[in-house]
Length: 229
Image (cartoon, rainbow, N blue to C red; front, side, top):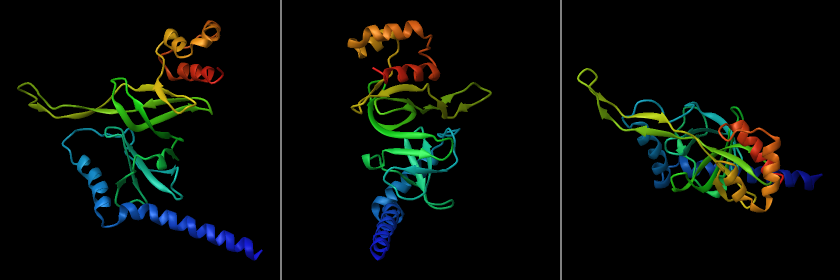
């Protein structure tokens, strides 16, 4: 019994040290913490109308690698996760490292995964994608993003129209069993090219099932089928 108690005490001590250490990295007076904090503040003060958040509230989330409760908010314009320990405290940015690669919000079980991928425009990105469906072999992911419409001159009545945040068209991706992230196939031909040895099975599935390539319900069904290949 004494051995069990000592083991539990040791584990609790490690847990507490890790939890304290996590926020110590951001909450102190050092250069790193100030840089992270100021990065959030500077972006908020930009003269842009609207909001870079789909939801500007902070919600508790489970973060892989963080053994405590953390309040989080996802900035879709900068592709950054803002964090704080409690309401009213300073905000910081979650480092984009493998250590903190999955964030599960308590609000609606909103799951974000930090991955490396190539966007539709060919950009190499280390960022966050929303996990819509997943099993051990494949995941369906969505890129949520706010874009900035630049300020422009209006007419004689409106004057200058300020810059504003605007919701961008979402992009969809697949994460395969080897963790590679690729664009979701846009049609039957693209899917067959992704799995050439399974062409007959793909044709049989698509013939037997009416699925849409343009909505998340259809893409989820296609992803679930891919998981069986």
